[in-house]
Image (tube, rainbow, N blue to C red; front, side, top):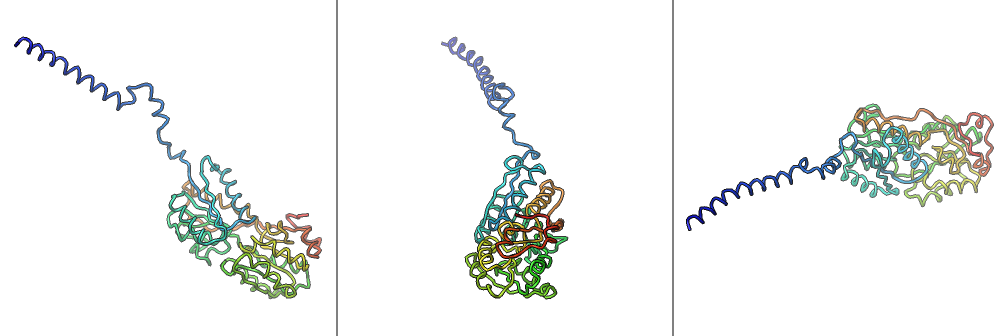
Length: 351
């Protein structure tokens, strides 16, 4: 009996170290990938990407869709790609439209804030206002904003402060009104339809009033609150004005077909604040190229994304190159003959 117990004890003494060694070996095998050659490549592949290859996210918020703002958006995306930030490669781009609703604009701004995007592009003043009211940290660039100081987006044009800067589309109102006198020398009154809710539009109307006197023109206003009122506003001016001037007002430009329809029927020439409105049926403009404005904004965005500059220190930029754009077919429909001197100096003539 004693011998049997002794044998069992010896066997246990021998077995215990073996079990301990086995357990230790198994523990090493399950926690150290280097000891298992099969899964090693998967561990290397699954490692987190470096900050150099991290995909950035840009939120693009557009207040309303019409050719000018669409051109600014596409110019921005195209130029970003040329600068090394291609959509769905180096950057994810989330494009949203507020459909001319301020409530929706705020919701979009809140979404971008919650998503913690790396940069926001706000297109048009109402959208820029919604973005700047919502986010105080994310870099915000605006474009197609006429007067960023008057609208409270920046502290000053040369030193914006905070997290906001961008490009202004302030158009040369006086030069544009001169086109009316050049085409119709006896013109005395100009009708301007604008949205009462857009500060930038009021700025343009005030500018037109300030310069109209020296051009021998009188400005007649028609304020609207919705796009459905544009046609009625145009019709209310028939017999009272010699020409229409369409500023870069988002609500009116998005419904410019209504103005053109009245103008063609009544033979009243239409001068516009930007070239896409001329392509849509106005006779002429002297102004900026929104595609190039978007490209200019993308160059600013590139500096921010690369960490080369901060919005607070980047002056608001304006487009230096202006061009005369004419639409001959529109002139014919409105009973106007475009002088040869204008055709000769035009940067673009739409036949």
